Length: 104
Image (cartoon, rainbow, N blue to C red; front, side):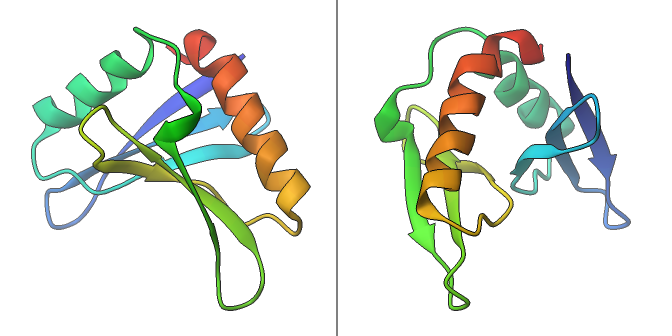
C-alpha cells in the first residue's frame, strides 16, 4: 500500500509526498501556492499511465542519481530522493510507474 501525504508549510504553501506504507518516499512534490491546484495534480496522477519521457534523469554534484517527474505540459511536479546508482534510480522510476495507479 502507498500513501499520499499532504504538507502545509508555514508560508501557506502546499506540498505532497508519495510514500510507501513503511515511510520510504517515492516522490516529493514541488511547492504549490494553491491547494486546489495541488489536489488537481494528485488526482491527475492516477488517471493515466506515466510515459517514460515524463521523467528527467539527473546526477547531482555528489554523484548521486535522482529524477524529476513532469506533467503533460513539461512542468516539474516532483522529485525523487537521491540514489547511489543509476540502476537504483531506474528501479525507482520503474517502481513509481508500476505503482502510481495504486497510490490514489
